Image (tube, rainbow, N blue to C red):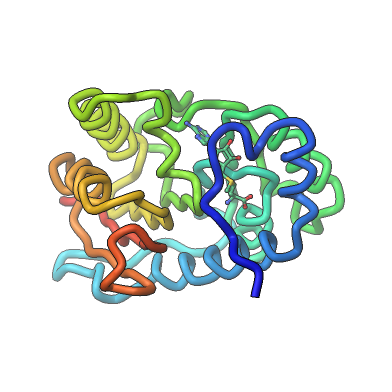
Length: 218
Ligand SMILES: C[S@@+](CC[C@H](N)C(=O)[O-])C[C@H]1O[C@@H](n2cnc3c(N)ncnc32)[C@H](O)[C@@H]1O
């Protein structure tokens, strides 16, 4: 069996690495599988409090795909009748998503923007739900010390809460590198207006695939 190492940002997503990423059937399968699971998690009943009204579905439901890469996740989201804004910081990746968009049946429901997850050009109260597949762990790239990482994570979580509508949900699939990283990502949400829980493929492994299922607190 081929062993796949965790990717390095940004090196594994630029120039010919962006082509390699986009052409990898293994990568496509994994991204699409994680996205389908995240859509199920978006509707998870355990996220419903007594006051929750359930989440909106259908084409009017606007979903942000954070770190959309070459668009594997966005493609699944539009096929599932969401209207999608895909956001990525690397032009090499976004260009490929734009190429693929031309052949999508539901292309009019997909918008792609070049932006940093930490500085999103989106106004308050506009987004129904947010999904991020294998990208959110990279947002602390370049921040070396603990305090800087915590500050950036808190600021970003606060902003995500601001742009989400009431009852908005976030599903994040990511790969924290260790226990400390898992804790600071988790805390950034619970301390900044979200409640929810975590699902791990292997609960004994702190650094493995992790899903955060979050809902904006009332
Ligand atoms: C594994 S890839 C893409 C995964 C995507 N779900 C897909 O279907 O292709 C991770 C992406 O996160 C993006 N990324 C990393 N840090 C980012 C940031 N701060 N803002 C926006 N995108 C970011 C990278 O450019 C890369 O394209």
